[in-house]
Image (cartoon, rainbow, N blue to C red):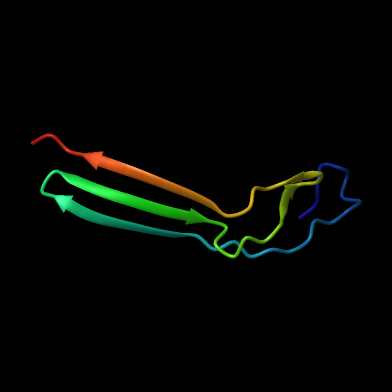
Length: 65
């Protein structure tokens, strides 16, 4: 991949791993945890704009029955 520089500077290769777990707490409630960039590696998808390191997201889903 190249940045937006007319294919002059190739971006470094990278591997990005993420994980997501969902647990049903009640019949109508589940709790979600996800991790992006699990290995906390530095990478860029646009030249000069590094992506964030390891990121955690927690959520609750409530379904009305």
